[in-house]
Image 1 (cartoon, helix red, strand yellow):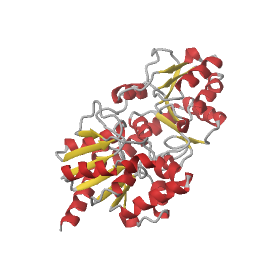
Image 2 (cartoon, rainbow, N blue to C red; image 1 turned 135 degrees about the vertical axis):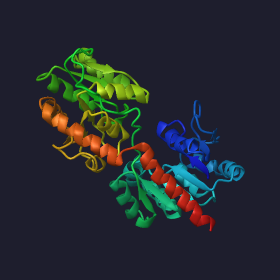
Image 3 (cartoon, rainbow, N blue to C red; image 1 turned 60 degrees about the vertical axis):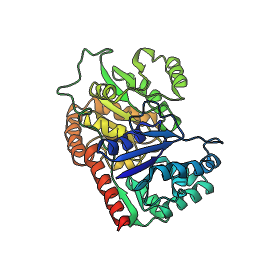
Image 4 (cartoon, rainbow, N blue to C red; image 1 turned 30 degrees about the vertical axis):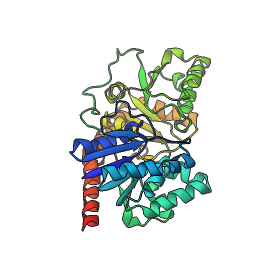
Length: 359
């Protein structure tokens, strides 16, 4: 099968998605406005005469059509309903698959009339809509999508990289004490401020150290805040790590924390669950698809540092809860959180769609 992907080629998620089909032997082409340096799938960077807002995307439709005519795909898959989805829907190529990446429906769609018009138009023209959370499916249906066009499938983790440690965390690890880890990037939507604000409250009762694996525009400000709160000796910002590095940090930690203000199914959460690290997450619909409060993790109110601190302290104080959560989470991941298993479902849907159209 020949598949053309349109999406932000600088994102690991987009590269990983296109890479799955490339590795499976399908002929693939990734078209993107962003950098393709180091991309392991065939990719072309599109030129835009204008910034990549609505007019910028529209100005590139001609060049996108030419690229697609040359490649002659059996199927086009746009990753993100606005922007790339909008130009893919106007490329004239069918069948069209659009993949929601979460913020398109959770943030963009309710934010403005223009976004709603774009996304509704894309959803009407799509032959298949992929979501990774019930909340995304619900919003897509409310926007006029037929439920029969929606396939909800989770992305999942690579079990060869993300697997549990064989024993308890090493008590002689650098920093000593308990370890709390966040692997979210440092953007406002992930609200890592909430963890920084909770840290002094946690350290009043426990010898805890904090590791932040991620990067973004909030980093300098957060590092300055850590200094202001006299937390330099207990807070480490490690920057953006590769998957092996993230897995190593998760296995070395007692607790994983996600303070996001908005999310679909978080791969970061699934990675923590697969590594056996007790998760504490903010109260979002997608998180509730994976975490049952008090059973396999904890759910706390968003923007509530005191609530987070209490949950971290209680989790660190309860070894039997952490052990039970670990065992339950490993079962959950094996059942519905494995990357290759879940992507086979997507691949079968793509092949079925191609078969129906070619009849």
